[in-house]
Length: 73
Image 1 (tube, rainbow, N blue to C red):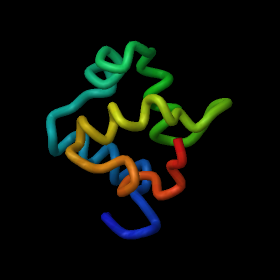
Image 2: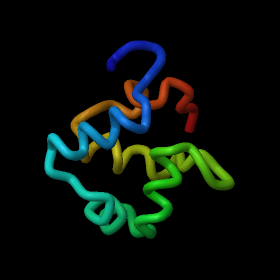
Image 3: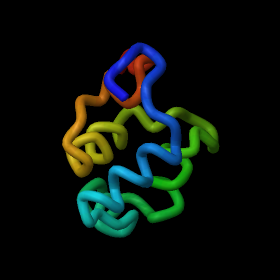
Image 4: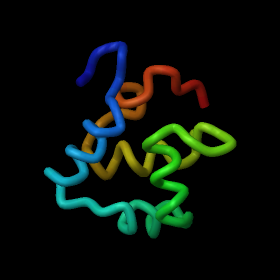
């Protein structure tokens, strides 16, 4: 998981499950909707969610770059 390809959405969700983290937990921390967290994890929506990625990474105990190697923000 810590390689240059990053993590798949399924791996992110599995890490959330293992850490007992729910979408609503991250959404509350980031001040956004659950749907927006889902969009960032599954890379859908208008933008890539660079502001939100650190909240997801923190929740699963990873560095943003380990999850999304393309992170440039």
